[in-house]
Image (cartoon, rainbow, N blue to C red):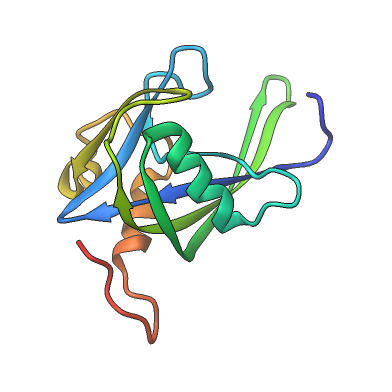
Length: 149
């Protein structure tokens, strides 16, 4: 491992008209062959929201406005016997008003709008906690407007 501390990453969660935007990870990337949210590392001096919007654009060619932080996830992987492989702190950010021509860019093998039910019912091979993040995104935050879904 090249760093002894967790890496910070941002996930872009986009929900439109009963669908959620997901990216299929490329064969040469972690979680290859699994669907998840566009996302990646937060660069030095970059906010979580800015990183989520940047990663969305890099992976899907869509531009969006940053919304609220939905939740964070601690993702830790060990290989036996307890050798730390990686540790990420991922922050899921709602991204709003996506515009542009959707296509797979950067490290996404494929990107597509997936019906919410397909994610919640596990009809695709998903990266861990994709459904948990989606459930959180579909739950209105106290005092805020309901998400478009």
